Length: 517
Ligand SMILES: Nc1nc2c(c(=O)[nH]1)N[C@H]1C(S)=C(S)[C@@H](COP(=O)(O)O)O[C@H]1N2
Ligand SMILES: [Mo]
Image 1 (tube, helix red, strand yellow):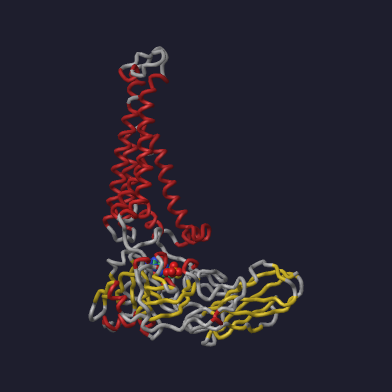
Image 2 (tube, rainbow, N blue to C red):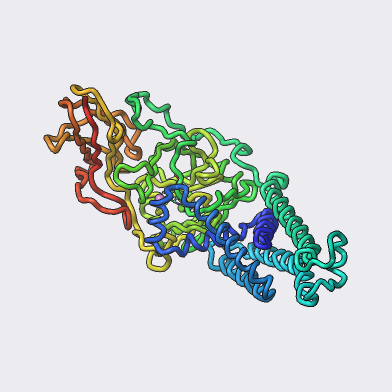
């Protein structure tokens, strides 16, 4: 009970202050310090629900430990206070070792501990009346407490004497429970009442100074079950280390460009939106994507060229890394030369004609074609520091992932669905392939280990997106395997060698089985 009240109090204070809640701070600290293998196991087990599982896990553990402590505290109150102190210290530690960088986040933790101590004291006082009474009156010679029960025969020991203490205890518990519930509800409502930061709906995006023509219809082959060329924002995969989606205030957003530059500067939202923005079609891909996986999505991005900003700052010789930091303290290292080589590396504000959704980095993120997201696509970006790879390491590089990570040439079968049933005879196979910033030259398929046959490719607006492919094959009734491989514009043929995503992206051919009847 006490622990529930403490957790709720912590949430409420955090909501009032607009800082990370203690539970999230602990979660963040766990996320950042979980051994890689354990994290991968958790992700494979819970998939993208891993965050919910983690947060609820923390709360459940707190409540369980709290229950045990509560029982112990009834015997030895000092144990209860000591337990709360341990929770408090753990919470404070989480804030400091976590990446939040927001020292004020200790206040909710301290408030939670204080509320916990007060509740514990109140409960012990309520329960305390039982103890002395029970101990001091062995045979029904009940002193003040026991007598006030009034009802019943004073001759009967035990239960009757305990009643007032028990009633006080139950009332206090109920009061604390009600308070905890109210605080919990309030903690969810307060952000709305405070008005909080303006969201995407408060930002009016300007038209691009260099707009792209509408996508050719032929980017979509129109085959049922085939991944659409443009991924709607609501379907776009989301990967990040944030337990709660950061919601920076666009009115207070600033990007700082500093480090090894001649002219460090800051830019705010109004200044950014005043610059001549450009559009680019770019397919993002996560390095954690398994062969055949769906951690890739394609959008038309609106933004300002990062290279222009870097030229304004004047990058110094030797600054081979752009170390980007997000509002929530995550970091990302991108090779300077990649951003400067003329590709559409953007400081993006728009995604498919809308301001970025919160989940995808509102108000501003980076997008760099050709590199996996963990080394290029900082959401909620607030800081770009020009530095050297040999001097500073970004978040995932510190955790054994690659420092530089171009996207690998990859292809996927969407149709038929794995283990699907089709009519024997002419069977339509279709999917997508990608080799961002090189471009896909060819896709081939083969059935049951036979000859490779070339698929037909849909249109693409450039070399930075995936491409849909389709092939027709003739099959007998029965079970069949299909494999796919892509060749990129450098002439590289996708390898059949199987590699895990860590450290620099999975490799191998995607294969599915289907049955023709
Ligand atoms: N702030 C922040 N930005 C981040 C990440 C993160 O953990 N925090 N993860 C990166 C990774 S690993 C990927 S694959 C892309 C995914 O972008 P999306 O969620 O918009 O698809 O975001 C990148 N940007
Ligand atoms: Mo990723």
